[in-house]
Image (cartoon, rainbow, N blue to C red; front, side, top):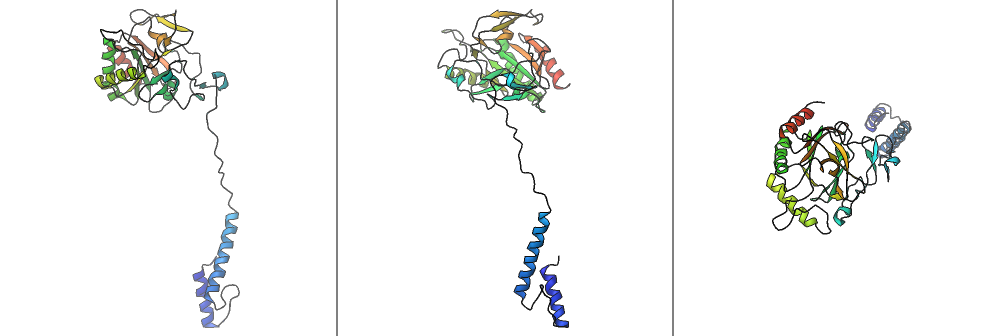
Length: 302
């Protein structure tokens, strides 16, 4: 297809030589010639575009499926349910995945080494948001999680919490830490307070958590391990090395990690590999050398 400049030049040459008139191209009126050429161009362009298939603008619906139980989700998916709690602050806690199916290994889940850990939940008092383990599953930037729980009055817990700052600085983000506290340090006037065990204690919990965070320079995920009101609480009874554990019944309410440390001592720590959410290491009482060895083992090895 000729441009209007080419058409005008040819027409001008024709007029200069023969005074001819080219029908449909130039009739002595420049404006008409340009308009004709432009119309032809539009028609030609439209014709060319008609031969190009329309792009498929349909967007696949990838919204997670709604659910009330794991049975409503497919293989390799679990239902994220609101934790079983009664406290008003915990009930108001949010997480965008609650009530939806998410990627997470299907059970059975267990409490021992090499078992798949359930999709546990913890409460972030700083943002009033629930934190679930599925948020770390198959994250390409994260290889392992140190999941720990302790109390404010516990000296080994304090030592572990402080050491985790250095480990996280050195090995993060491949190593992540979720450190949960379930009660504060108490005082001479009153015993340690169990977090979210009575109505209206959120400010008390938040105040202690801020103090703990500042004292130890916490740079990792610090959460509350709040008490839930499930009817079936199971604990572990282990030897001094945290091995040869047996499950024992315990009375509700029980906090999330209650199943692990009630009879085994605190701080309690586990290492979970995010590629499969399997428990790789369990520790009661903070065996620093063992914890450090296993952090290195699972950060730098597949």
